[in-house]
Image 1: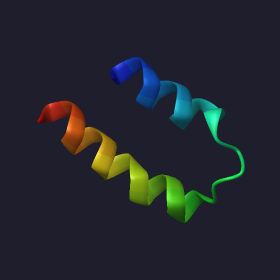
Image 2: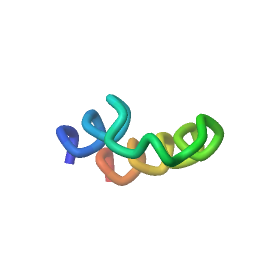
Image 3: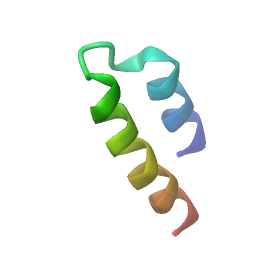
Length: 34
């Protein structure tokens, strides 16, 4: 899960805007922690 989040943050989804990434970032972190 951590690797996937890192890949996305590294630019795995360039089509997503920064706001979208920020929006998904916290959710990803919460999911990983959960």
